[in-house]
Image 1 (tube, rainbow, N blue to C red):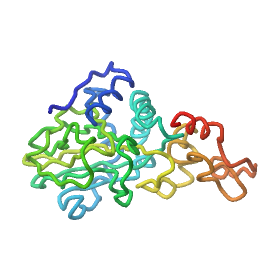
Image 2 (image 1 turned 90 degrees about the vertical axis):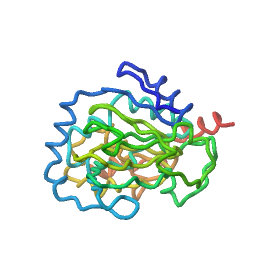
Image 3 (image 1 turned 30 degrees about the vertical axis):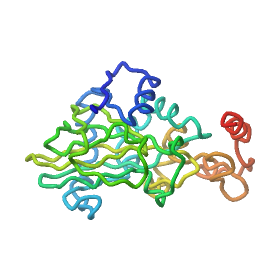
Length: 285
């Protein structure tokens, strides 16, 4: 099954519908190629010194994280209206969602195909209900993605498959797209990094979101120094986790809101947005 391709004029509802149907979709040329070049310039010092990964991550693959602290342009990508609107739609069964991880994935020539997997397996392989998505993820093409250079391999429709299945590269489709495009997919979709049979490095910006009652894969509070976090806009801080998730999760000491704690305010509040939590319970019922 081919990967659904949408234009940059698509709305969040259209993208979310494709994700519900196929588990993945590509929005082509959502930002200009120059935006990706700017990210590369901002991250150049860290990209140059990032070590390669492991058996799962790839011995010829480098994963550079901490993008909120290191790249102003990546902050813009995180907050892109089409992406956030889609995530809100796909994860709307939860009271709230938050940033899960940020990383540039650089697949070097000679790298083999990554093991096909589901991203939600990071949560201790917990068997989430078939109809409950816990993640909505993006991979922005920092360079062109092709079948030859390690473009992400996907299995459209596999978000409906049984859990813990094993697949090979031949079972997948490549997410081919020009730089500035974005691949969106759910945490249940079977996928993996492609083998790089070209002579150039393939770079993608992996920005993922998850329901707020689950632990983040990348610890944003340590990845982003306090002195940097205090200067960031409130909507981004809340997305990073400086907000209570669901109801009562994430408060500080005497029921302080995380934003109050970050900014040194002493105001005590309450456990959280009980009204929203109750509304979600009624919706599910």
